[in-house]
Length: 437
Length: 182
Picture 1 (cartoon, rainbow over the protein chains, first blue to last red):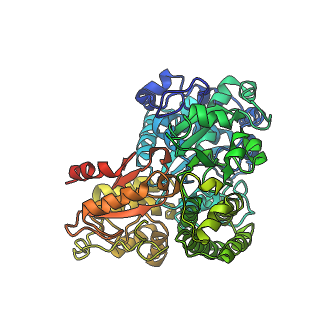
Picture 2: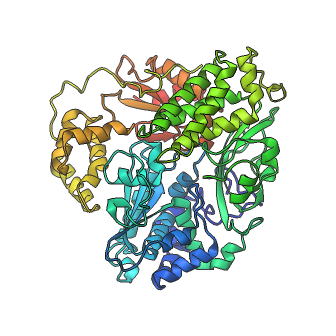
Picture 3: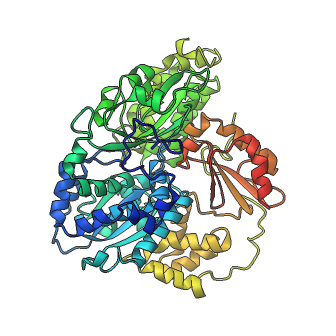
């Protein structure tokens, strides 16, 4: 629901139904709302059947990459004699994204349940929930929920009396965006610097502690419970556009918009109506200029592109961007694009783990050049240099942080070149008419 | 214009008034704290995995992570002090220097930036008398830094005061918040 606002009638609230409902945070309250029924059902099923239901539902990873969840789970080979691990990626740090924060602080037991289901499905006895260190409130609620679930015998050495051991542990990060990258998260969990690893080997072969590991986003794991309870068909039918994108998706909306918050809509919902009706449109007297629809590392959309988008994995790609993590950053005509993009580049420069040259140097130089243009000291040649650096930063590094920095720069220069040129030519940014300058 | 980060793109130096630095280091992992670590060790298949949690405990007990703390953790987890330091320096949330009583982190990444986060930073610097990012106020109470995305972009501008998360901060709310911190 449009937390912290009233739910909008056009939302479909499956995962966000209890946002703002303090009673849902407790074990008793969660059970009253149907909690842990899905886990009970899951523990009575064969793990392979759970994987099949999730496969059939069409659920795809909600962290950004959109990889089919059931398929990912099926990579974990049962009976290989090794301990398996489930990692829950709760290192939500993509600028613009705050849906997992709401999920964890309002429905912590939903995540404990999702982790237990996921762990059982992939043959793991241990699940680690890696939460970024800055999330003090989600950490508090998750630790409390885990403790309550242990005390009630829901997890532990005999989970819900099934004879299966399922341990769930909360692990606190210490401030590093890169630890949201799956292999960096595993290194961090092992007590190392959070440097991403070269793939292959993929986590399902050699993940955390060198053992077969599956890593899923918070929202993905939480979605598994209603899928098991209501069936794959129920989930698959929640689809307004491309049948490859099913279910509901949480979008966290921020920036220059009347009602920022976390909204849940069915995949394929029209983005125009989402922005203007659900989120309340632009602030008084302003106009939307651009949208970054999936967190800071996806291409910037012009309003023409955004307003023609259907909100699913394919829909955003068709209109020049990506669904990413569902972090919608709305930018209005009072914001100079160069400043916005320079600040994004600075973020990536700060967060680069610095093991790859292209990223370490590329993010820093991109930031320096963009800030120079922002301050009115750029040259036209700088734009070519930026595009050249961006090319050298793309597809050449261990992880995609480097690519992520290049993406908003390239899309920004391509789509809002007039603003860059105006600053270079010494024309000051005039908020409202800059877009047509 | 935002006041520049100390040292440009590098981490700001949290230099302050070494009020803790001259106190002799007493081991952190004794009694209940030692038992807390033992419980943590049970969660992982090896000792090294408890490194981040152990460092969090040092910071909780000491206010920052001094080198002696790194040595103590290294011995307990059978690592070298150099390895532990390598890990400490990777993560931004471990303080490698003492900081003010209240460590204030203001998110200024783009989504908050376009909602006026820079003015919130300025208000904090002015009202705390810290004056400069990363520098502790003369009374030792406040250290203000800019932080990258706190993950609460819909509640611009989010601010962290030590462990407390404050949403929707605006410049005019800064004096009231500071008055609460004594």
